[in-house]
Length: 63
Ligand SMILES: [Zn+2]
Image (cartoon, rainbow, N blue to C red; front, side):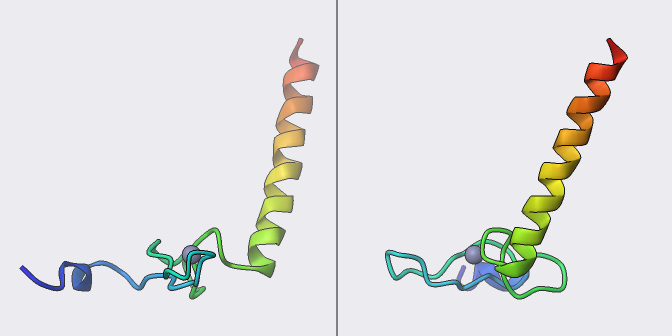
């Protein structure tokens, strides 16, 4: 069977250091995977970091 990837969603295609295209599935409305989204990825990372910090505070308060 050829073209098994056709059934899957679009791939990221980002050129990695080894000059091979990234084969991860793209995220939502972007055209890149979670690791290659650039600005959005940085924004999301910051958001997650804040959320993690809040969770930590909550746990501390529960004691
Ligand atoms: Zn990628």
